Image (cartoon, rainbow, N blue to C red; front, top):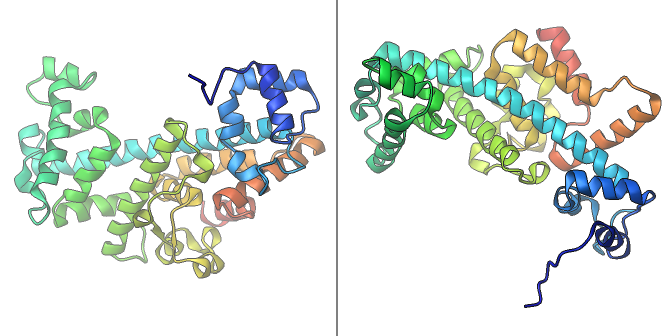
Amino acid sequence: MSYNKPFLSYEQLINKLVSEKGLRVENRDFARQALETYSYYDLVNGYQEVFLDNNNKYLNRITMEYLVAFHLFDKTVQSILLKYSLQVETRFKNTLAYFLGHNLGVDVCDYLNGHYYKTKVNKTVLKKVLKRIANVHRFGDYPTKHYRENHNHIPPWILFKNTNFVDVIDLYILCNQPLKHQITESLLPYPGITLDEKVRTAINALSLIRKYRNAIAHNLKFIRYQAASRHQLELPILERIVTNILVTPTDIQEGSGKNDVYSMMLSILILLNDKTLVANYIKELLELITPSFSRQIQDVQEGLFADYCIITGIPEDLSSRLQTYVEEQL
């Protein structure tokens, strides 16, 4: 068989990039080290959609050094978002477990009893969600396993530590209205928006975080990833939560909903709901996009961020927005 993706040595890969793709390779030793370290797929396939022209050639300004710098910048953005999305998941699970335990009980037979959840939905969906979580009760690892072997019940705040993010989000969506309202008020204790608006925002924000986090975890093309439109954050509502500093009237004019990378950033911010965590989150983002190194590094970083904004939908004035938000809100 003649394979259409045969093995190529690092030297052959570099030659291919230069001759077929028109990539500027000024230091072949650097290029070889880059391919050994980051892989051809991550550097080339991961970004070629945004750096190739209509003739399938790299834009003249793109070099191997730039691809490596852009890749590292992208991975740093992802690592920050991943880190704080895990904080959001922990807080959400704690909040859900608190209100289920308080209102329904601490035994799985109580808080996973289908009678306490919506009855006007597809019962098959409800049964599947409850069954997946019940399986965690039977087979989950530590700490659920420890409680299974040493205690006479497994409370929700323990069980949810081993439960998938998607399953606890679905359980929240399926909660009866009074219970869902209690949970939502705790998740989004912001004045100026109605309870129904809070419910929609919480569901969409949680779903956006989960979707983008999966793209990060599975090494998908994060910068080009677009969550489903049904998970859009409603910008007029979001503006009332984060003020018109982070969501401007111009943003709203351009489109009433947002489901891009910036929407994930904002989803994390509003669901952290802790001033220390929010301050640290913003600090890490600012340190990345406003470097205080040498002038040369700063110029490169600013160029990278400008490209990154165009591709992902992040506003180019994010640095000033975040700084103003910290000064006025935190």
